[in-house]
Every structure is written in C-alpha cells, then in structure tokens.
Length: 187
Image 1 (cartoon, rainbow, N blue to C red):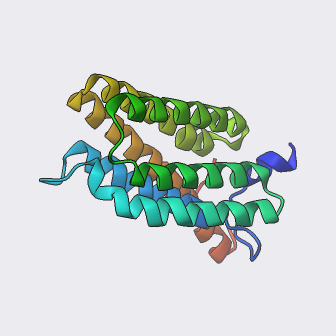
Image 2 (cartoon, rainbow, N blue to C red):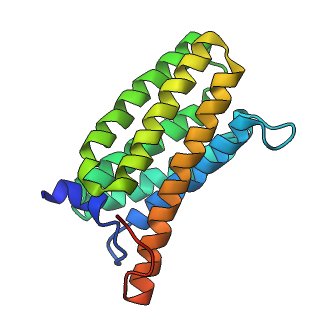
C-alpha cells in the first residue's frame, strides 16, 4: 500500500499526525449538520450549523489537512483540506440560489466519491465515512434542486451516520494509542 493511503488506513496518533484531529472535526461537523438537518431538535435546520461548520469544519479541517500534507500523508491531507474548504464555503453561501447550491453539493459529491474510492482499502470505517458522505451530498443536492424537505432529512440522517463513523474512527485511534493496545476495533 502506498504512503498516500496510509493516512486512511492508520489514523494513528503521533506528534506529527493530525489525522485524529481531522476525523474528530469531520465527525462532529457532520453530526451537527446532519442532526440539525433532520429537524429532530425543535426549531432547527441545517443553517443553524453554519458557524460550527465554518470554524470546526472549515478552519480545523483545513489546518489538519495542511498538517497531514506536511507529514507526507497525501490522502488525509487531500481529504481534510478539501472538506475544510467545502465547509468554509458552505457556511458562507446562504444567499446562493437553489440551482447554484444544488450544483455545489453535486460537485462536492464527486470529491466525496473520489475519497471513497481512495479510502476503499482502509476498511469498513473508511468506506463508511466517505461512502455515506457521498450519498448524503447526492441526496442533499437532489433535495436542493427539488426543494424536498423529506429528502433533505434523509440526507441529514446519512450525514449524521457518516459523522458517527468519523468520530468513532478518531476515538478508536486515540483510545488504542493511549492504552497501547487495540481496545476498540478499527477495521
């Protein structure tokens, strides 16, 4: 396996690796965005997560990605910086029309599909994080084009599932590293 996929396969904890930070930021942002999109919390919508998406999803992911690039981790560097750019842009795009927003989501679904293919050898967690993100973005794009609240809620649940997978990935990696053994499975 190439060094490019190593970041996807081993979200390990070391002084030079920001993989866990990136997966925590991605997971928490997707969880917040997803759950707020579902309407589970009374009076909330996806727009309520804009500030969180900008700071945690945009800035933190982008910095974690740059850190990964510096450490030679091309996969997680690409994933985190590009997804950081996505969240930073999405959080400031509230005035975009439905066709522009739908196209934006659809184009980012292509990036998520690329990340899914690249992470395929990372095991079930890699496929879950990026595969569910791809499905969520496609459904969000279709919901945006058609102004479909039900489809947007389904996309929110799928985004939340992707966020849970990313959060678990980082939690398992951090726990295993801190305990010096495989306390939580990563594959």
